[in-house]
Image (cartoon, rainbow, N blue to C red; front, side, top):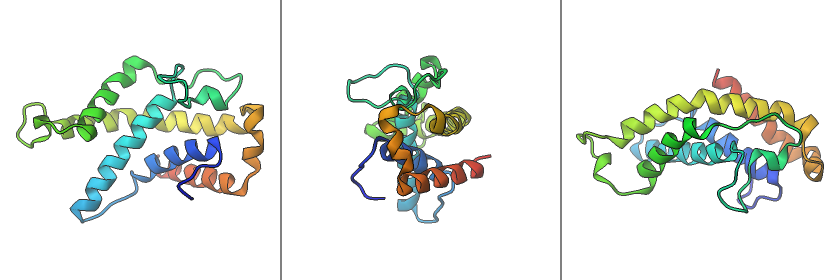
Amino acid sequence: MSNTKQFILDHVLYEMEMYLFTFCATSDEQLFKNMIWVTKQTHMRNLLHFFSNNKDKKTDIIYKDILSNIDTLEIKNEDKSRSIYVINKSISHLTMNRIKDSKNNLDIEATEEIERMKPHLVEKIKKFLDELPNKINSKYKYELENPEIQCIISTVKLLLKNCE
């Protein structure tokens, strides 16, 4: 996949693929462990925003942009707000709370939030993919015919099986 996203589905599926891949990725090298750690949290945060009923910014992409006539796929704010807060502090701020002996260690809190939100996100990703063929917004329907998009969908479905 190139860095330039041609389609809205390319962009959204990339987030799903990267998030799910981090649960399979391992390394003995600390640098790569750190990259996996940050990647997992970054894509988790992006998906938590994607599975919202409201946009923070006009240009944000949420599931309702892609799916029409869908029952909610929203992850409620009360379920995700703590996760977003902890992730933002964990990967986006230099803070004493990331020090090992800190009373409020952010790495421990982030690990707990990752585990707490994983079943919610896996469920929403599955539901999104299940609904996609029949409920896709008509202006994006042509994207589903793209072989690269189909390949990414297959990869995401395979990664979902690894999360079970």
